[in-house]
Length: 133
Image (cartoon, rainbow, N blue to C red; front, side):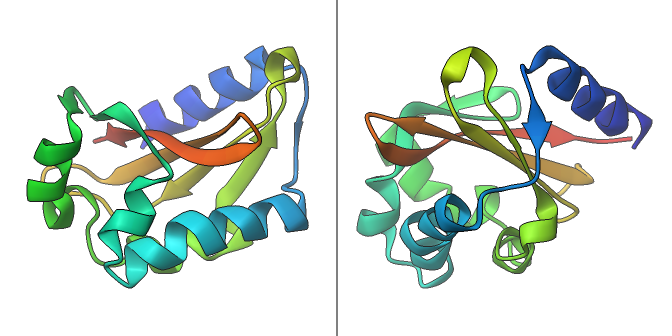
């Protein structure tokens, strides 16, 4: 847990400005990424995922992530991702991104840190950093 706190502080200290999430932008992430993930609408969800996708120490191609979907995106994650209190927003180098910290993670880990980035005016899930104590 200490590692996660240090990681979060480091990320926010490096950003130009860390702030609370913009409700309209956060709602786009929830509608286009989190809701399809929760509903197992994998094709719609994958339209908003960058590949290769990094989760912890592993990089996944689209076919690998499809096969490992339930292992990477564990139950309990979507309720965390629907909570605006899980998010922080930063705009380093004028590129908007959000980071969500969830205390639901694959077996062997304690925390998942989701990174969302706006690419070509479209919110994308860029990676998941997995932390253990």
